[in-house]
Amino acid sequence: MTSKPEARQLCHPSDPTVVQPHKQALLNRLNRIAGQVRGISGMIEGDRYCIDILTQVSAIQSALDAVALQLIEDHTKGCVQKAVRQGDGDAAISELMGVLRKISR
Amino acid sequence: MTSKPEARQLCHPSDPTVVQPHKQALLNRLNRIAGQVRGISGMIEGDRYCIDILTQVSAIQSALDAVALQLIEDHTKGCVQKAVRQGDGDAAISELMGVLRKISR
Amino acid sequence: MTSKPEARQLCHPSDPTVVQPHKQALLNRLNRIAGQVRGISGMIEGDRYCIDILTQVSAIQSALDAVALQLIEDHTKGCVQKAVRQGDGDAAISELMGVLRKISR
Amino acid sequence: MTSKPEARQLCHPSDPTVVQPHKQALLNRLNRIAGQVRGISGMIEGDRYCIDILTQVSAIQSALDAVALQLIEDHTKGCVQKAVRQGDGDAAISELMGVLRKISR
Image (cartoon, rainbow over all chains, first blue to last red; front, side):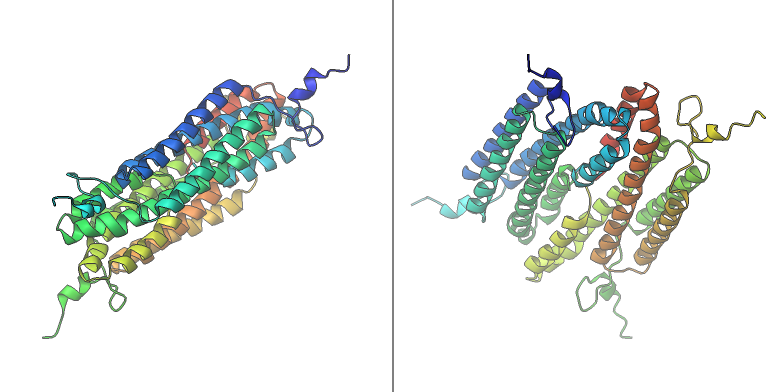
């Protein structure tokens, strides 16, 4: 058979396909975040008080932050660790640092 | 008639209704953010590379941050300024600080 | 005599002198932060474990954040409120927003 | 001889001594940050304008953030990579995540 199930776990420039280890949990979280974003639109349409809207925005920021941290942890334990074992550790860590510089915490 | 259309612009505990001055722009931004969140779900479902997903998460964080700053500016120029003129400035500013402590920057 | 002690409380482009209402508390905090920064230098000189050093860096970030929030609150309750009463509210708030965009939270 | 100079480079619970690879550069940066903190004390003592003080606080936050990112990168390229090669990768990465949760970005 030509199916290469292991290819799905690679995280390499040549085949950067990654099955997230917490895939369903992440999708559930993102679903909830999408609902929260729509909730804020509803609050603005309903002329709700600014402070209440901002409190909801900060809740989304926290939820998105948790998603980012989960992705970073799984990426580091998965892809980065694999790269280290293959002798590509420094490049993988430099790439990770590029994302850490951008992600808000 | 007793209708008080101006009441819609009040931002007081007794009638905390606020028509956002950039209402349509905010709704457009939130619409785009909701689309970006769905985009990330799609990337995770499609087993896309973690770093590419994280880059998109950081784009949403920036977009959400811009929404927060717009709301804070409009709230301060609107509600807080009105409260100051009515002698309730300190309370309005303490409330604003509570939100600034929570909002990520 | 023409001394104008009240001028010291102005926060205007023409005389931007401001006696911080929590002056001594801020100076104490900054003193402690300076000590924490020297403490980190000592840890690096002593070849201490990276994670322990980073934990101290995050403590300084929190302490500095608290200083920033105190300054923002006092500035808003003082200078901004005064500007609003003098009809210069929008300019003072725009200036404040410029700082909020830069300050990490 | 029983001297183990390499022990100085270990980053293990049993001997968590780490010579920072950018030791002198970090010490220089921290020296500059300590000077900036004293500079802010001087501004507050001199009753300088709040916004100018806050601008300096944000400069320190950026400088401290750069120190944190340097420490994180060096720790990950050094200690974490070594732990991965020794089969302790997951524990080292969990420890790193604990710090990433605390560090402001």
